[in-house]
Image 1 (spheres, rainbow, N blue to C red):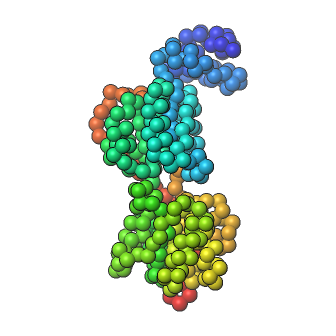
Image 2: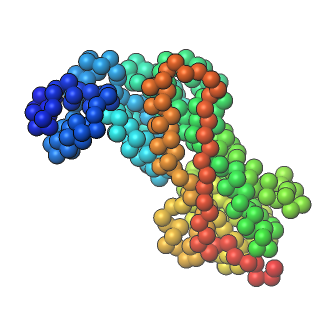
Image 3: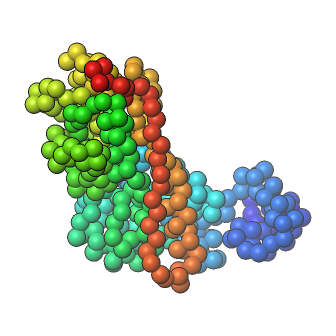
Length: 335
C-alpha cells in the first residue's frame, strides 16, 4: 500500500496524505478522513523513504540499565506510547548496569543517526559527564537529577521520609534501613537521606541510623541484610527498604525470627510491586508514576527536536508519588 492508495481511499490528494503523515497543516475534515483510512488499513510509511523525503530521522535511542526491571518496563512503555504517536521508532540498549556499555551505547546510537536519546540513569561519573557534553543529539535523562542535563525524576527522598514518618507516628522509634549502593544518587543516596530526615525531625539522631547496603535488589539480599540487622539490633521495631523486593526478603527473615509484621516491627518498601498486594499482611509501599516519567521524558525530547533553537535553563522535572497502605505499618503493640 502506498500514499497514493491512501489518498484515493480517503478522497484527498497525495500531498494531503504526506502532510498528515509528517504533521503538516491540514483541514480537520481531511485529517479525519485520512486518519480513518490509516487506522482501517494499518498503514505505516516506509521509514527509510520518509527519512530521505523529510530529512528527519525517525529513531530515538533508549538506554536502559536492566530490561528485566519492573520500573524500566513502565518507563519504556511510557516513552513508546508517546513516541509512537509521532511515528518514531525506539532503538533499545540494555546495559545490565555496565557503565562501559552505557558509554558505548551513547556513542553507537549517535553513529547510527538517532534523532535523540533517552537515558534511564543510574550512576553519575566524570566519564558520563564528558559523554553528555560531547553528545551531538538532544538527550534526556530519567530517574536521576544529573547536573546540566534535562531530567525527569521521582521524589525519592520525600517518599522514603514519609514512610519513616508513618512508622514514627505509630510508635516505632528504633528504625533500621536496608538500602543500595549510594553511587546511585536517587535510589541509593536520596532514599537513605529521607529516612534520616524523618528521624532528625523528631529529635532522633539520623546519622546513627543502622543500615546495610544490598549488593542487588533481590529477596535473598533483603533476607541477608535483615538477618544481620536483627543480630546487631535485636530491639529494632521498624524497617524501611530500598525496594519492595528487598522488603519481601526482609519480611521472610522477620517471620523466621518470630516477629509480627506491623505491630511488633513495621516494614515498608518502595516500588508498588504486585507481590506486595498478595502477601499477608500486605506490604505498605510507595507508588511512583513510572509510566508518566517515560511520557514526560519523551515529550521533553520531542520539544527539543521540534524547537532546537530554544535555549535557556536546562529543564528538570520532578514527579510526585503516593503511599499505598497495605497494613505492614501499624500502631506498635506497646506504644
